[in-house]
Every structure is written in structure tokens, then in C-alpha cells.
Length: 82
Image (cartoon, rainbow, N blue to C red; front, side, top):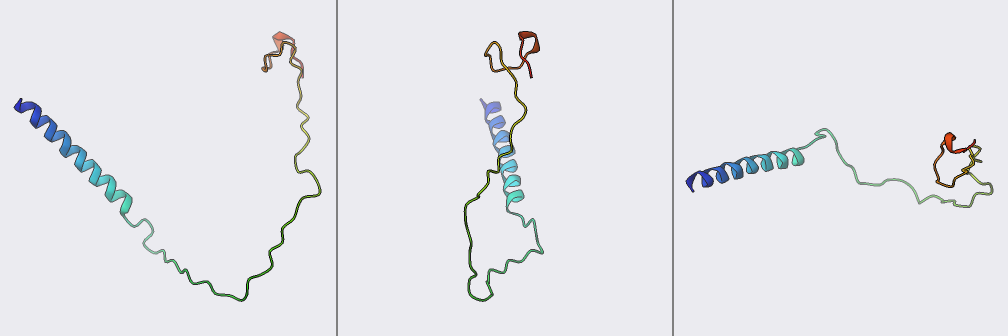
């Protein structure tokens, strides 16, 4: 019984050390020279233009093949052709 308690205690200690290492790794300052300046300076807001495209942007697909056995896979031995 005493061996199991020692093993559980060692396992908990290893887990605690790993958890503390993970926490330290995630809270350290990765960019020490970085400064954030949230002040927005400038004149009045500009004009925002939006619209719709007059031409389709999808290119034509020229890679077609004929599926003779309708299995949705290309196999030349089944008679499928490009």
C-alpha cells in the first residue's frame, strides 16, 4: 500500500511540474520590444465603395473525363476516357 502512495505522489509531482512548465511557456512575453498604440489619428472617415462583379470569376474547367461504369473514379482499365 505504501508503494502505491509513493508512486501516486511521484506521478502527481511530475504532472504538477509539467503543468507549471506549460503555464510558464504560455504566459511569458514572446515579443518584449512590441508596443501597441491604440490611438487612431486622422481626418474624417473616407468613402467606402462596394459593388458586384459584372463578369464571372470562375475559370472554365477543361479537364473532363467520361465515367463508363459510374463509380466516380477514373480507371482506364474500366473504359474511362479523358
